[in-house]
Length: 376
Ligand code: ATP
Ligand code: MG
Image 1 (cartoon, protein in one colour):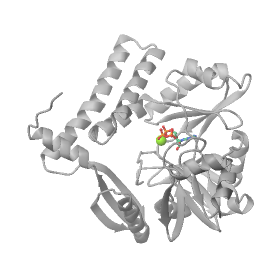
Image 2 (spheres, helix red, strand yellow):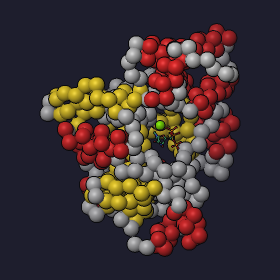
Image 3 (tube, protein in one colour):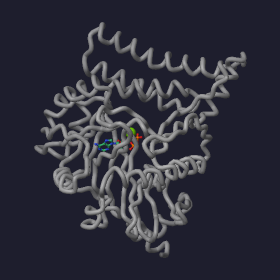
Image 4 (cartoon, rainbow, N blue to C red):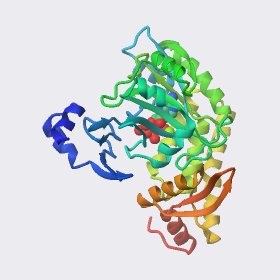
Protein backbone atom coordinates (compact mmCIF):
# COMPACT_ATOMS: atom_id res chain seq x y z
CA UNK A 1 0.00 0.00 0.00
CA UNK A 2 1.24 3.45 -0.80
CA UNK A 3 1.60 6.23 1.76
CA UNK A 4 -1.10 8.14 -0.05
CA UNK A 5 -3.59 5.52 0.99
CA UNK A 6 -2.46 5.65 4.63
CA UNK A 7 -3.01 9.39 4.69
CA UNK A 8 -6.52 8.82 3.40
CA UNK A 9 -7.25 6.17 6.05
CA UNK A 10 -5.99 8.52 8.74
CA UNK A 11 -8.07 11.38 7.37
CA UNK A 12 -4.98 13.58 6.99
CA UNK A 13 -3.73 15.79 4.23
CA UNK A 14 -0.72 14.53 2.26
CA UNK A 15 1.45 17.21 3.85
CA UNK A 16 0.35 16.40 7.37
CA UNK A 17 1.11 12.74 6.71
CA UNK A 18 4.56 13.58 5.33
CA UNK A 19 5.21 15.40 8.60
CA UNK A 20 3.98 12.44 10.64
CA UNK A 21 6.07 9.97 8.65
CA UNK A 22 9.36 11.15 10.11
CA UNK A 23 8.00 10.34 13.59
CA UNK A 24 6.91 6.81 12.77
CA UNK A 25 8.91 3.99 14.29
CA UNK A 26 9.32 0.77 12.36
CA UNK A 27 9.12 -2.60 14.11
CA UNK A 28 8.86 -6.25 13.26
CA UNK A 29 6.85 -8.90 15.01
CA UNK A 30 6.85 -12.50 13.95
CA UNK A 31 8.18 -11.58 10.51
CA UNK A 32 5.65 -8.78 9.99
CA UNK A 33 6.87 -5.22 9.57
CA UNK A 34 4.74 -2.29 10.71
CA UNK A 35 5.01 1.31 11.89
CA UNK A 36 3.61 3.05 14.94
CA UNK A 37 3.41 6.48 16.54
CA UNK A 38 4.98 6.11 19.98
CA UNK A 39 4.46 9.76 21.03
CA UNK A 40 1.65 12.24 20.82
CA UNK A 41 1.48 13.78 17.38
CA UNK A 42 -0.68 16.39 15.83
CA UNK A 43 -3.85 14.94 14.35
CA UNK A 44 -3.20 11.35 15.33
CA UNK A 45 -3.55 9.51 18.62
CA UNK A 46 -0.42 8.25 20.26
CA UNK A 47 -0.12 4.51 19.71
CA UNK A 48 -1.63 4.47 16.22
CA UNK A 49 -0.19 1.68 14.06
CA UNK A 50 0.03 1.34 10.30
CA UNK A 51 0.03 -2.33 9.53
CA UNK A 52 -0.72 -4.51 6.51
CA UNK A 53 -2.40 -1.62 4.73
CA UNK A 54 -4.75 -0.80 7.60
CA UNK A 55 -4.80 1.62 10.47
CA UNK A 56 -5.16 0.60 14.10
CA UNK A 57 -6.00 3.78 16.01
CA UNK A 58 -4.36 4.57 19.29
CA UNK A 59 -6.49 4.77 22.43
CA UNK A 60 -7.20 8.43 23.18
CA UNK A 61 -5.61 10.20 26.12
CA UNK A 62 -8.07 10.37 29.01
CA UNK A 63 -8.12 13.80 30.70
CA UNK A 64 -8.30 14.12 34.46
CA UNK A 65 -9.97 16.43 36.93
CA UNK A 66 -8.47 17.26 40.29
CA UNK A 67 -11.74 18.65 41.64
CA UNK A 68 -14.87 16.61 40.97
CA UNK A 69 -17.47 19.25 41.80
CA UNK A 70 -16.06 21.67 39.18
CA UNK A 71 -14.36 19.35 36.71
CA UNK A 72 -17.28 17.03 36.00
CA UNK A 73 -19.77 19.74 34.92
CA UNK A 74 -16.95 21.47 33.03
CA UNK A 75 -16.04 18.36 31.02
CA UNK A 76 -19.61 17.30 30.30
CA UNK A 77 -21.06 20.79 29.85
CA UNK A 78 -22.29 20.03 26.33
CA UNK A 79 -24.30 17.09 27.65
CA UNK A 80 -26.93 18.93 29.70
CA UNK A 81 -29.71 16.68 30.90
CA UNK A 82 -27.73 13.65 29.87
CA UNK A 83 -26.61 11.01 32.28
CA UNK A 84 -22.93 10.22 32.36
CA UNK A 85 -21.79 6.65 32.86
CA UNK A 86 -19.39 5.99 35.69
CA UNK A 87 -17.21 2.91 35.25
CA UNK A 88 -14.41 1.53 37.33
CA UNK A 89 -10.91 2.51 36.27
CA UNK A 90 -8.83 -0.61 36.53
CA UNK A 91 -5.15 -0.52 37.32
CA UNK A 92 -3.33 -2.62 34.79
CA UNK A 93 -2.16 -2.03 31.26
CA UNK A 94 -4.09 -0.90 28.23
CA UNK A 95 -4.59 -3.31 25.37
CA UNK A 96 -6.33 -3.04 22.01
CA UNK A 97 -7.17 -6.22 20.15
CA UNK A 98 -7.94 -6.37 16.45
CA UNK A 99 -8.18 -9.09 13.86
CA UNK A 100 -5.90 -8.80 10.87
CA UNK A 101 -5.76 -11.51 8.20
CA UNK A 102 -7.63 -13.86 10.47
CA UNK A 103 -5.11 -13.36 13.26
CA UNK A 104 -5.90 -11.66 16.56
CA UNK A 105 -3.22 -9.18 17.60
CA UNK A 106 -2.86 -7.27 20.86
CA UNK A 107 -1.40 -3.77 20.75
CA UNK A 108 0.19 -1.93 23.65
CA UNK A 109 -0.62 1.70 24.53
CA UNK A 110 2.23 2.93 22.34
CA UNK A 111 1.10 0.89 19.35
CA UNK A 112 3.52 -2.00 19.52
CA UNK A 113 2.28 -5.53 19.06
CA UNK A 114 2.79 -7.22 22.41
CA UNK A 115 3.57 -10.87 21.65
CA UNK A 116 2.95 -11.87 25.27
CA UNK A 117 -0.50 -10.26 25.49
CA UNK A 118 -1.41 -11.57 22.04
CA UNK A 119 -0.72 -15.13 23.19
CA UNK A 120 -2.04 -14.99 26.74
CA UNK A 121 -5.34 -13.44 25.61
CA UNK A 122 -6.12 -16.57 23.64
CA UNK A 123 -6.55 -18.47 26.85
CA UNK A 124 -8.31 -15.68 28.75
CA UNK A 125 -11.12 -14.68 26.44
CA UNK A 126 -12.74 -16.06 23.31
CA UNK A 127 -13.10 -13.24 20.79
CA UNK A 128 -13.66 -15.39 17.74
CA UNK A 129 -17.44 -14.95 17.46
CA UNK A 130 -17.10 -11.21 18.07
CA UNK A 131 -14.60 -10.70 15.24
CA UNK A 132 -16.61 -13.00 12.96
CA UNK A 133 -19.55 -10.64 13.29
CA UNK A 134 -17.59 -7.38 13.61
CA UNK A 135 -14.30 -7.81 11.74
CA UNK A 136 -13.44 -4.09 12.00
CA UNK A 137 -13.83 -3.96 15.76
CA UNK A 138 -11.11 -2.77 18.09
CA UNK A 139 -11.63 -4.39 21.46
CA UNK A 140 -10.19 -2.08 24.12
CA UNK A 141 -9.57 -3.15 27.67
CA UNK A 142 -7.26 -3.49 30.61
CA UNK A 143 -5.04 -6.46 31.47
CA UNK A 144 -5.11 -6.76 35.24
CA UNK A 145 -3.84 -8.96 38.03
CA UNK A 146 -0.67 -9.77 39.93
CA UNK A 147 1.04 -11.85 37.27
CA UNK A 148 1.61 -9.41 34.48
CA UNK A 149 4.77 -8.02 32.91
CA UNK A 150 3.91 -4.29 32.98
CA UNK A 151 1.57 -3.05 35.72
CA UNK A 152 0.86 -5.63 38.39
CA UNK A 153 -1.85 -4.91 40.93
CA UNK A 154 -3.86 -7.28 43.09
CA UNK A 155 -7.57 -7.82 42.51
CA UNK A 156 -9.40 -10.25 44.79
CA UNK A 157 -11.02 -12.12 41.90
CA UNK A 158 -7.88 -12.41 39.76
CA UNK A 159 -5.27 -15.05 40.64
CA UNK A 160 -2.92 -14.46 37.77
CA UNK A 161 -3.94 -12.25 34.86
CA UNK A 162 -7.31 -11.29 33.39
CA UNK A 163 -8.83 -9.12 30.69
CA UNK A 164 -11.63 -6.59 31.24
CA UNK A 165 -13.17 -4.74 28.30
CA UNK A 166 -13.93 -1.03 28.75
CA UNK A 167 -14.37 0.27 25.23
CA UNK A 168 -15.21 -0.83 21.70
CA UNK A 169 -14.03 1.31 18.82
CA UNK A 170 -13.81 1.22 15.09
CA UNK A 171 -10.25 0.15 14.42
CA UNK A 172 -9.65 2.62 11.60
CA UNK A 173 -11.49 5.75 12.73
CA UNK A 174 -11.25 5.21 16.48
CA UNK A 175 -14.97 6.04 16.86
CA UNK A 176 -16.44 4.46 20.03
CA UNK A 177 -19.75 2.69 20.42
CA UNK A 178 -22.22 4.32 22.82
CA UNK A 179 -21.71 3.01 26.35
CA UNK A 180 -24.98 1.08 26.51
CA UNK A 181 -24.57 -0.61 23.12
CA UNK A 182 -21.02 -1.54 23.98
CA UNK A 183 -21.97 -3.11 27.30
CA UNK A 184 -24.80 -5.09 25.70
CA UNK A 185 -22.60 -6.37 22.91
CA UNK A 186 -19.85 -7.52 25.23
CA UNK A 187 -22.50 -9.29 27.30
CA UNK A 188 -23.75 -11.07 24.20
CA UNK A 189 -20.26 -12.33 23.45
CA UNK A 190 -19.53 -13.24 27.06
CA UNK A 191 -16.58 -10.89 27.27
CA UNK A 192 -15.77 -9.79 30.84
CA UNK A 193 -16.12 -6.05 31.38
CA UNK A 194 -15.18 -3.35 33.79
CA UNK A 195 -17.80 -2.51 36.41
CA UNK A 196 -20.49 0.09 35.66
CA UNK A 197 -21.45 1.94 38.84
CA UNK A 198 -24.36 3.70 37.26
CA UNK A 199 -25.50 6.56 35.09
CA UNK A 200 -25.90 9.89 36.82
CA UNK A 201 -27.14 13.34 35.94
CA UNK A 202 -24.17 15.60 35.37
CA UNK A 203 -25.11 17.82 38.32
CA UNK A 204 -25.52 14.92 40.72
CA UNK A 205 -22.51 12.96 39.50
CA UNK A 206 -19.79 14.57 41.64
CA UNK A 207 -21.51 13.62 44.90
CA UNK A 208 -22.16 10.06 43.70
CA UNK A 209 -18.59 9.67 42.53
CA UNK A 210 -17.22 10.86 45.81
CA UNK A 211 -19.14 8.09 47.55
CA UNK A 212 -17.90 5.52 45.01
CA UNK A 213 -14.33 6.75 45.34
CA UNK A 214 -14.45 6.32 49.10
CA UNK A 215 -15.47 2.70 48.68
CA UNK A 216 -12.84 2.04 46.04
CA UNK A 217 -10.21 3.70 48.19
CA UNK A 218 -10.98 1.40 51.10
CA UNK A 219 -10.47 -1.57 48.76
CA UNK A 220 -7.20 -0.24 47.35
CA UNK A 221 -8.73 0.14 43.88
CA UNK A 222 -7.72 2.83 41.41
CA UNK A 223 -10.68 5.04 40.59
CA UNK A 224 -13.35 5.83 38.03
CA UNK A 225 -13.71 6.88 34.41
CA UNK A 226 -16.74 8.97 33.54
CA UNK A 227 -18.09 8.74 30.01
CA UNK A 228 -20.65 10.60 27.96
CA UNK A 229 -23.45 8.26 26.77
CA UNK A 230 -22.05 8.27 23.21
CA UNK A 231 -18.64 7.21 24.55
CA UNK A 232 -16.71 10.12 23.07
CA UNK A 233 -15.97 12.23 26.16
CA UNK A 234 -14.05 10.65 29.03
CA UNK A 235 -12.75 11.93 32.34
CA UNK A 236 -10.77 10.20 35.06
CA UNK A 237 -10.47 10.58 38.82
CA UNK A 238 -8.41 8.43 41.16
CA UNK A 239 -8.39 7.33 44.77
CA UNK A 240 -5.86 8.37 47.34
CA UNK A 241 -4.87 4.69 47.55
CA UNK A 242 -3.87 4.81 43.88
CA UNK A 243 -2.01 8.11 44.21
CA UNK A 244 -0.12 6.88 47.25
CA UNK A 245 0.50 3.44 45.76
CA UNK A 246 2.05 5.10 42.69
CA UNK A 247 4.14 7.36 44.90
CA UNK A 248 5.45 4.44 46.92
CA UNK A 249 6.35 2.65 43.71
CA UNK A 250 7.99 5.68 42.14
CA UNK A 251 9.99 6.51 45.27
CA UNK A 252 11.29 2.96 45.38
CA UNK A 253 12.91 3.80 42.02
CA UNK A 254 13.40 7.53 42.53
CA UNK A 255 15.92 8.15 39.73
CA UNK A 256 14.06 6.20 37.10
CA UNK A 257 10.66 7.83 37.45
CA UNK A 258 10.44 11.35 36.10
CA UNK A 259 9.97 13.94 38.80
CA UNK A 260 6.72 15.22 37.19
CA UNK A 261 5.27 11.76 37.87
CA UNK A 262 5.71 12.24 41.63
CA UNK A 263 4.79 15.91 41.64
CA UNK A 264 1.45 15.34 39.90
CA UNK A 265 0.39 12.73 42.43
CA UNK A 266 1.29 14.93 45.38
CA UNK A 267 -0.78 17.75 43.90
CA UNK A 268 -3.79 15.43 43.46
CA UNK A 269 -3.66 14.62 47.16
CA UNK A 270 -3.69 18.31 48.05
CA UNK A 271 -6.78 19.04 46.00
CA UNK A 272 -8.64 15.96 47.21
CA UNK A 273 -7.95 16.87 50.81
CA UNK A 274 -9.40 20.35 50.24
CA UNK A 275 -12.40 19.27 48.15
CA UNK A 276 -13.32 16.73 50.79
CA UNK A 277 -13.06 19.40 53.42
CA UNK A 278 -10.96 17.22 55.69
CA UNK A 279 -10.67 17.97 59.36
CA UNK A 280 -7.24 18.64 60.79
CA UNK A 281 -7.10 15.14 62.16
CA UNK A 282 -8.01 13.49 58.86
CA UNK A 283 -5.61 15.70 56.91
CA UNK A 284 -2.86 14.78 59.32
CA UNK A 285 -3.57 11.13 58.78
CA UNK A 286 -3.33 11.63 55.02
CA UNK A 287 -0.07 13.49 55.51
CA UNK A 288 1.26 10.64 57.59
CA UNK A 289 0.32 8.05 54.96
CA UNK A 290 1.83 10.16 52.20
CA UNK A 291 5.04 10.47 54.14
CA UNK A 292 5.18 6.74 54.66
CA UNK A 293 4.54 6.03 50.99
CA UNK A 294 7.48 8.23 50.08
CA UNK A 295 9.99 7.53 52.79
CA UNK A 296 9.55 3.87 53.61
CA UNK A 297 9.82 2.71 50.01
CA UNK A 298 12.86 4.90 49.47
CA UNK A 299 14.55 3.52 52.58
CA UNK A 300 14.03 -0.01 51.37
CA UNK A 301 15.69 0.77 48.06
CA UNK A 302 18.67 2.51 49.64
CA UNK A 303 19.08 -0.46 51.96
CA UNK A 304 18.91 -2.92 49.09
CA UNK A 305 21.51 -1.07 47.03
CA UNK A 306 23.68 -0.73 50.13
CA UNK A 307 23.60 -4.51 50.46
CA UNK A 308 24.85 -4.79 46.87
CA UNK A 309 21.56 -6.15 45.55
CA UNK A 310 19.92 -4.93 42.34
CA UNK A 311 16.67 -2.93 42.35
CA UNK A 312 14.09 -2.51 39.64
CA UNK A 313 10.59 -3.47 38.60
CA UNK A 314 9.87 -7.01 39.66
CA UNK A 315 7.26 -9.00 37.75
CA UNK A 316 6.00 -12.57 37.68
CA UNK A 317 4.37 -14.12 34.64
CA UNK A 318 2.71 -17.50 34.17
CA UNK A 319 2.45 -18.86 30.65
CA UNK A 320 3.83 -21.50 28.32
CA UNK A 321 7.60 -21.89 28.10
CA UNK A 322 7.60 -20.37 24.62
CA UNK A 323 5.42 -17.39 25.53
CA UNK A 324 7.73 -16.47 28.41
CA UNK A 325 10.76 -16.75 26.10
CA UNK A 326 9.10 -14.49 23.57
CA UNK A 327 8.20 -11.96 26.27
CA UNK A 328 11.75 -11.79 27.64
CA UNK A 329 13.10 -11.36 24.12
CA UNK A 330 10.52 -8.63 23.45
CA UNK A 331 11.50 -6.74 26.62
CA UNK A 332 15.21 -7.06 25.93
CA UNK A 333 14.57 -5.90 22.37
CA UNK A 334 13.32 -2.65 23.88
CA UNK A 335 16.65 -2.12 25.60
CA UNK A 336 15.64 -3.35 29.05
CA UNK A 337 18.04 -5.31 31.23
CA UNK A 338 16.26 -8.36 32.59
CA UNK A 339 17.48 -10.49 35.48
CA UNK A 340 15.66 -13.73 36.03
CA UNK A 341 15.16 -14.36 39.73
CA UNK A 342 13.05 -17.49 39.68
CA UNK A 343 11.99 -19.82 36.89
CA UNK A 344 9.98 -22.95 37.54
CA UNK A 345 7.22 -25.17 36.24
CA UNK A 346 3.82 -25.34 37.86
CA UNK A 347 0.83 -27.27 36.52
CA UNK A 348 2.28 -27.38 33.03
CA UNK A 349 3.05 -23.64 32.96
CA UNK A 350 6.28 -21.78 33.33
CA UNK A 351 6.25 -19.33 36.24
CA UNK A 352 9.00 -16.78 35.86
CA UNK A 353 9.91 -13.91 38.17
CA UNK A 354 12.21 -11.31 36.69
CA UNK A 355 13.57 -7.88 37.45
CA UNK A 356 13.64 -5.03 34.97
CA UNK A 357 16.84 -3.56 36.31
CA UNK A 358 16.71 0.20 36.80
CA UNK A 359 20.26 1.36 36.24
CA UNK A 360 19.85 5.03 37.18
CA UNK A 361 18.48 4.29 40.64
CA UNK A 362 21.18 1.73 41.33
CA UNK A 363 24.03 3.95 40.14
CA UNK A 364 22.87 7.20 41.74
CA UNK A 365 22.01 5.53 45.04
CA UNK A 366 25.41 3.81 45.07
CA UNK A 367 27.10 7.14 44.40
CA UNK A 368 25.29 8.93 47.20
CA UNK A 369 26.02 6.08 49.59
CA UNK A 370 29.68 6.42 48.68
CA UNK A 371 29.61 10.04 49.76
CA UNK A 372 29.33 11.69 46.37
CA UNK A 373 29.22 15.45 46.95
CA UNK A 374 26.28 17.20 45.30
CA UNK A 375 26.38 20.80 44.16
CA UNK A 376 22.82 21.87 44.81
P1 ATP B 1 -3.28 7.98 29.21
O1 ATP B 1 -3.94 8.98 30.10
O2 ATP B 1 -2.53 8.56 28.08
O3 ATP B 1 -4.22 6.91 28.76
P2 ATP B 1 -1.90 7.05 31.52
O4 ATP B 1 -0.85 6.04 31.74
O5 ATP B 1 -1.74 8.36 32.16
O6 ATP B 1 -2.13 7.22 29.99
P3 ATP B 1 -4.11 6.27 33.13
O7 ATP B 1 -3.87 7.38 34.09
O8 ATP B 1 -3.99 4.89 33.64
O9 ATP B 1 -3.25 6.38 31.84
O10 ATP B 1 -5.59 6.50 32.56
C1 ATP B 1 -6.07 6.12 31.30
C2 ATP B 1 -6.09 4.62 31.13
O11 ATP B 1 -6.99 4.00 32.05
C3 ATP B 1 -6.59 4.12 29.81
O12 ATP B 1 -5.60 4.21 28.81
C4 ATP B 1 -6.98 2.68 30.13
O13 ATP B 1 -5.90 1.80 29.90
C5 ATP B 1 -7.23 2.69 31.61
N1 ATP B 1 -8.60 2.29 32.00
C6 ATP B 1 -8.89 1.46 33.04
N2 ATP B 1 -10.19 1.32 33.20
C7 ATP B 1 -10.80 2.05 32.22
C8 ATP B 1 -12.15 2.30 31.87
N3 ATP B 1 -13.18 1.79 32.54
N4 ATP B 1 -12.39 3.11 30.81
C9 ATP B 1 -11.38 3.67 30.11
N5 ATP B 1 -10.06 3.46 30.40
C10 ATP B 1 -9.78 2.68 31.45
MG1 MG C 1 -3.38 2.96 34.06
